[in-house]
Picture 1 (cartoon, rainbow, N blue to C red):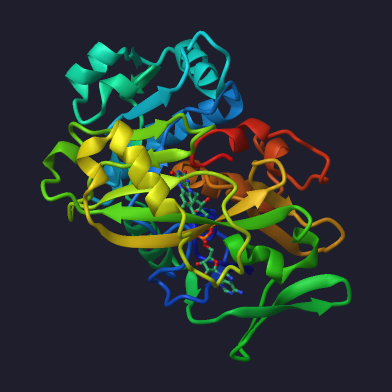
Picture 2: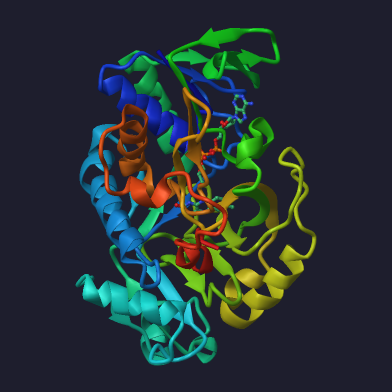
Length: 391
Ligand SMILES: Cc1cc2nc3c(=O)[nH]c(=O)nc-3n(C[C@H](O)[C@H](O)[C@H](O)COP(=O)(O)OP(=O)(O)OC[C@H]3O[C@@H](n4cnc5c(N)ncnc54)[C@H](O)[C@@H]3O)c2cc1C
C-alpha cells in the first residue's frame, strides 16, 4: 500500500500511474476528494503549456513530449478539449540577436525544428492587432504552444484515479508521519485518522516544507498574484486570435492568457513573489496598478477593463528550479514529489510515470535531474530564470 498525501497535479498523476501499475494506493488530501482543494496551485482556469526553456534542452524536449500527449491523447481521452493550442507570443525588449533568455528560446525552438514565426512590428500589427506595434522590438510566435484547462484536467484525473481503484480520503489533513523505528509507515491526520502503508509519498506542494524539516532548506513557497479582467468585448482576446503571451518575461515578468469561456482575461506576474505563510492569500497591492500601466503601453484595449478577481497562488520553488522527486535520504519509506517551481503543470502527461518510476525504483534518466540534491547544486537555474514557470 502506498499512501500519497496531496492531490494536486503531482499526487493525482502519481496515484493514477501507480494504480495502473497494480499498486494499491490511498490518496489523502485536506480538500474534499475527489474534488480538489481550491487553494491548490493546480487549481486555476489555465496553465501555460510551452517548450520555451532557454537553452535547457532537457525541459524543451520533456515539454515537447508532454505537449504531444496533451494534443494527441489527453484531448481525446475524456471527450473534451483540455489543451488549447492557442500558440504563444514571446516578446523580447531587445533584438533576438542579443543574448538573452528569449534569444536562447528562439535558438532552441529552431534547433528542434518548431515552425515558429519571427515577428516584426509590422507583422505583429497584422497578425495580433490587440498589441501596440510601437512597443514591440522583437520576438516570435510559436503555434505549437498553448494552455491547459488546469482545474478541469485535475478534476478528470482524480475521477479517473478513483474509478481505477485509488482510495480517496478527503478532508484529512496530515499532521505527522507515523514511524516504526526509523521507518515511515503511515500518516496521522489532524482529525485523528491514521493511514498505514509500505511507504508514504508527500506531494503536498507549497505546504511541504511545513511537513518535513528536511524539505525546508531546499523548497520555499512564494506567493504570486494573478489578475482577472473582464473586457466589455472579450472577442479580440479569444484563443483563436489571441495566444498565450509572455512579455520580456525574465526582466518584466508579465504573462497572460486568452479569454476563458466566461470572458475573463488572466494576467500574471512571474517573479520571486512574496514570502507569505501558505494559508495567507492576500494579493500583492502593487501588482494591479503596475500591471495597468504596463497594459496601457502594450495592450491598450485591456488597460481599462474592470478587474473581476485577483488571486494568490503559491509556487513551490526548489533551490534550483528543478522538480523534487525521489526518496528522502535517511528516512526509509518516505518519498517526495513536489518543487513545481512555477512550471510543473504542463508536464502532467509525463509526471505520473516519472514519479512512479522513482517510487518503484525503476531506472529513469529523467530522475537524475529531479532526485534529492544538496543546496549547492544549481542545475536548473534556467528553468527559474524564464517563464511561468521557471523563476
Ligand atoms: C500563479 C501560478 C502560475 C503558474 N503557471 C504555470 C504555468 O503557466 N505552466 C505550468 O506548467 N505551471 C504553472 N504553475 C505551476 C503549477 O501550477 C504547479 O507547479 C503545480 O500545480 C503544483 O502542483 P502540486 O501537486 O505540487 O501542488 P498543489 O496543486 O498545490 O497540490 C498540493 C495538494 O496537497 C494538499 N495538501 C497540502 N498539505 C496537506 C496536508 N497536510 N494533508 C493533506 N493534504 C495536504 C493540498 O490540499 C493540495 O491539494 C503556476 C503556479 C502558480 C502558483
